[in-house]
Length: 305
Ligand SMILES: Nc1ncnc2c1ncn2[C@@H]1O[C@H](COP(=O)(O)OP(=O)(O)O)[C@@H](O)[C@H]1O
Ligand SMILES: [Mg+2]
Image (cartoon, rainbow, N blue to C red):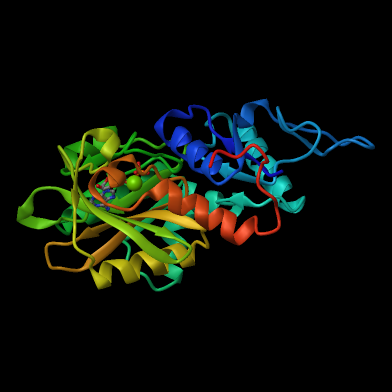
């Protein structure tokens, strides 16, 4: 009788998709918020208490969201994911993968270390250092983006185009993340989202932003694209570099034709991708999790056939 916890604050469309697919395979999936979980260090107690799973831990957890909060809160949520893995509960994607990708500095560093193309990036604490880097970049004819270290869905990203923009150069919680802006040329703004599951590309789309932010959450339009070997190879290599079960990889094609990896998402949404491609993303995700991690766990008896 296998039961799955889907960690999410807001199950929405994605949660429902996952839950239905789990049910169709005979697994009962429950939505749980990481904010409601507990760590206990007491004799004869489960070390991690998850609402609805007080008697026994879930057979696997699917992480659809890690809430924001203070550093302590976020560390605590990640502690729960780490603890579950220590307790032999499969965590999809696991805490290490989430840590590596939620932290944009670490993502950039790991991509570079793996020899993958990613734009020049600087992460500094000191404002005068940030200003010096930005001034140098502008003098050399480049534009820059500043990003929150832990941002998502395009939130808090600013573009620096000219020296006067430097007046409002601001850190995000004390850290400056500066990245050279990749110009994709005359074709307007767009980037690619490549979705990888267990090392394979399962879908690719092009996102056309209303402005230079190509996030679907910022109104970008999704377009189906043909399979592209170079793009696919890069996305697979990036996912491997960050050691993820599945990932949504953002890639921009420079005006000169070079590809640059921007981001590797460990908790990617797939509603936009699903709208333009023929694969059933939730089905493939659940198949992968069940096939690789739940081979020995019997499905729930009252399965929907
Ligand atoms: N260096 C860059 N050059 C050009 N566009 C970028 C660059 N970095 C990010 N963008 C654009 O901004 C979007 C959001 O940036 P990203 O780093 O993926 O942060 P988020 O986690 O908020 O999605 C990207 O999808 C891309 O369209
Ligand atoms: Mg992104």
